[in-house]
Length: 321
Image (cartoon, one colour):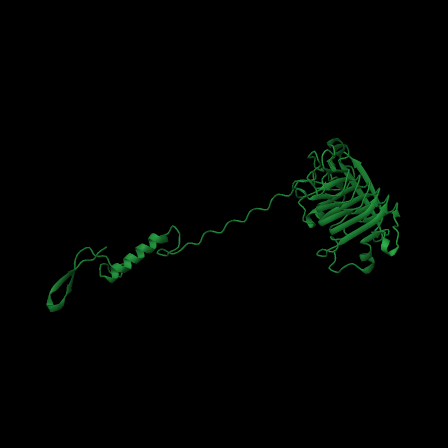
C-alpha cells in the first residue's frame, strides 16, 4: 500500500482493449483478440487505499479479463467470447454491448445493457442489485471465484460476504411482453454444484499482463485460494488452508448507568427525587416559614418549649414534626 497515486504508466494500465467505432470520425472498430488482461491482487484499490480506482475495458474478442482487486467502478464494453472476472467493487460494474461472455462479478450494483447470450456468476449484496436493460438470453448464477486475498478485498469494498447473496434477484428494465420468454433465467443448481468453485492462480507480468490458471471443481483444490461466500447450495469454501467461518460479532458496549439526582431534586431516581421528593421539600420549606417547623432539622422536641412573649407572659411553642 502507498499513499501516493499511480504513475502515468500505471494509470494508463487501467484502460485496456481495442478501438471502439466512431462513425462520425470515420474510425472503424478494432478488436483486441486472444489476449489476457490481468490486474492482480494489490494492484488497484488495495494498493491505493482512499483512491477511487476505475477500470475500463473495451473491444475485446476471445480475451481473458481478470480484475482481481478492489475498484470503485468497472466498465466493460463491446466484448465478444470473453472470460471476464471482476473482484469486489465498492460501486457499480457496467457491462455494455457484450455477446457470448462468461462473467463472474462481485459488486454493490451490476448494470447490464445491450448484452446477449451471456452467463453471470454474481455476488449481489442487495435485492435487485443486478439490473438488465435491452438484453436477452442471459443466465444468472451464484458467485464462484476464489483467489488469494479475496476475503480482505470484500471487507475493503464494504461488501458483506457473510450476508445473503441476492444473485437470483434481477431487475429487468425492459421485460418482454407475453408470451415471449423472460430475458434472463436462473442457472440450474446442478452445474453450480459440479462447477462450484473457480480457483484462480494469477501470474502477473508488467502493469496489466501475465496469465491466470483457472481450475474449476466441486471442492477446493488450489492452496492459497479463499472465498468468504457460500456456494448456491450453501456450501462454504472450507479448505485446509482457509477457514470461511465468519468472525464473531463485536461485544456490545455496556449502557451507561442513568444519572442519579440528589434527594429533593426534580429529576427521576430512586433516592428521594422525582415530583414527590420536590413536593416534600417545598412543603417543608413552607412549614419553616410559617413557624410550624424548626429550620434546624436536628432539633427534636419531645415537649413544649418555654419562651417569653410580649408583656412578660410565658408562651408555649410546639415543635411540629
